[in-house]
Amino acid sequence: MFVPHHQLRGNGGHPFYAALERVLQTEGFDAFVEAQCAPFYAPRKGRPSLAPGVYFRCLLIGYFEGLDSERGIAWRVADSLSLREFLGLALGTPPPDHSTVSRTRRLIDLETHAAVFTWMLGVLAKAGLLSGKVVGVDATTLEANAALRAIVRRDTGQHYADFLTDLAKQSGIATPTRADLARLDRTRRKKGANADWVNPTEPDAQIMKMKDGSTHFAHKHEQAVDLETGAVLAVTLTGGAAGDTQTLAGTLAVATANLAAVRAQPDARTPAAVAAQIAAVVADKGYHSNAVVLALEAAAIRSYIAEPDRGRRRWHGKHAERDAVYRNRRRIRGAHGKGLLRCRGELLERPFAHALETGGMRRTHLRHHPNILKRLLVHVSGLNLGLLMRTRFGIGTPRSLQGRRTLAGRLFAAVRRLWIALRSPRTPRARCRPRDGPCAAPRVPRRHPSHFGGARTPETLSATGC
Image (cartoon, rainbow, N blue to C red; front, side, top):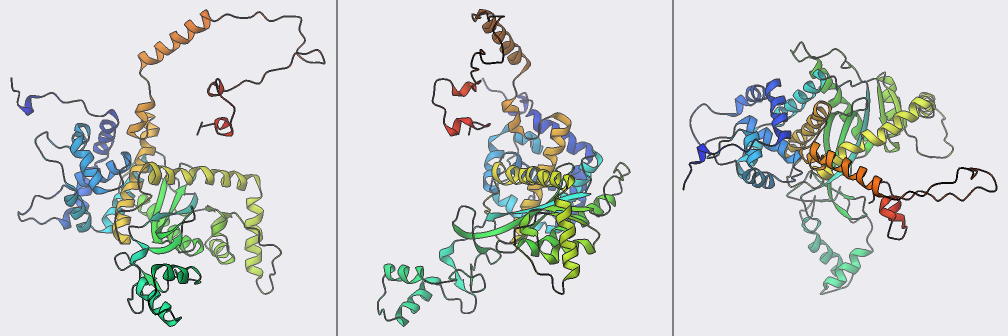
């Protein structure tokens, strides 16, 4: 009637996580992270700690499963036998809870997480999926874990509601109501200036207008992508209101340091094809400025930055800037430059969609840039591992298997299509009917299968059916 749990047969595990575990074991992932995290673990006995390999695998699960919080990761691991097997946990061993994962993240410093990210780049380099010659840079916003109603003034620490009340009393309203405060606040200019207001619980976030028109506290997530392979070379995090021209140099510096660290790895299998220096940078028009183009040219880096329409420009006393801008303009108008800009639209937006939309990191549940960047580095490392898995096995995420049919299913579908084709009546076509000319019969345009039985609307004409 009863069977002990240690006598139960294993479920075989998830095929994707089983293949990913083979890759990590082959490359020596556990030995590397244990050596990196050794200073953070005390030799004396105490509360049972979380092994470094288990901790980083939990964060990788957050990317592959699309989980936005560490609490969600803990719930998902506790609910799945396949994920427990991926973490190397026995059936009777309790999985780590969210507080243990959070505490381990706080104890391990940011440099160790960056070293794990660089190690993942080294794995891509061994597989020939890293070049670093042509780099694309782009940025997006992450909604911060902070509320606008909790802002205070930087100089006095006064809350926003109290500040509006004082303004209303100064304007002659003795006992202002909420409607009076809203009416007074609606007509004020520069009421959300980051130089004046800050959230006390999240001082790293900044007030900015999102793409949907709403105003929130946000962080700026910028990344550098290898346009030859699609691998993410660097990830940086700044305040949401930081300009693109101000953060480009920092992101390129991090990408250059990561490439140098990959080349310096003591593994003989690391190919020398990894570039020692970035040769070209591709970006959108938000990164275009005289100083940026001139600085890239001074660093011997070719720029392919889209130029906004600024009208007729005056170059009195700016001959060096003029020549650099004109050379960049000539490059982006050529065939090679146009091809790079098209690749930028594809290879730069795709990591954002994978890591932030389906990966669940568009809104952060952590606070302060070091904590968010720790999670983001391992999250993007999972994206790079997905690129390796897609190259080796044809599948980059565990959810990709849901759209794959088995061999028996494909054979059944082929037999069914053949049976329908044999049973469908065919109308013989007249051989003497001319194909072209004034007597030709009008050709009926071929319709998509989803169009039959309904009206042709603009929504149904899209390629994806969305």
